[in-house]
Image: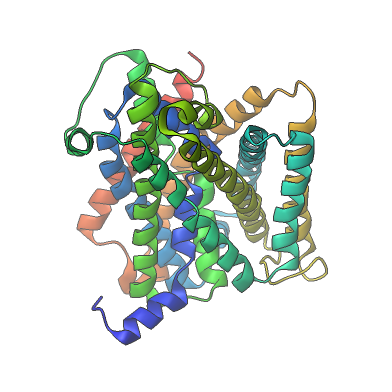
Length: 408
């Protein structure tokens, strides 16, 4: 796409779905994974971010293209092509997974605010109300602007990384030079870093957002750039999280269990402001994802069942959509407030269900995007199909490996 005034204006008109979807990938779980990776293995896993970015671009581009060409959501297309029964069981499984994911986001929100002395019994209800109010009372245009602003706040991790003063020569070398270790902890972390890249909900949300924004095939060249920019943004953030923790925690041999631990540990090593920025980034990422995950779930369940959906609707015009979104937030927040709630078991269950469902979602996508009666001239090329299928096979294998290692 040539850089002209018209093309720039077109890009600004369609920007949003790709950037938002990719950045939600850096949620509480993602930030924890990258923080622990940096703390345990320094910069040795940075090289994985290059193939990760390629995989993310390939998969996200396909669903965005399907949305622009067909004007239909992924759940709609799966129901039409593969039947209501398959769609029902797929939606039910993803609903279970996303409830667990929503719980983990509120857990991240609570942990980040506790760093600032705010009790979870205040933080969680307030956060839940804010994300509920934003979607239920807002319009798609307003909600998208808030989400894009949330994406910008991820710059806190970049700043924290520079404040940690890493050896940039070594960082750049390890970014382009693959390194391997046969140790089980390294292999588990490698699987974890790669496995956090693609989740089933992302594909449904992105295609639904493209459709709700009414992006047409004529605008798709610009929309593709929205997807590519989003994928690069999220992995740049991941890069700086690993670097920040590698330059401080790994260097001093400090072990952590999650992103909140990383934020606390940064203060004596990189200064108070680096610690505060890291914690603010975690709070933003957790609340951001706590908005998107229930929203994505409400989208694809309602679309899969043929019910009205969309942020521009209300409880009267789209009751199933609004009540499902509300229910996920309420239940997710209440679980965090239950004393001694089995949070680890809930998060593990959601991870397992995501891993099991990912192969089905990716294969459905590839069958649909290669259907000439559906996509016309916009089906995948042979070269693109080769890249896409290799990406799918690798992602499926790694995700299933992550599920298996979770029980060992």
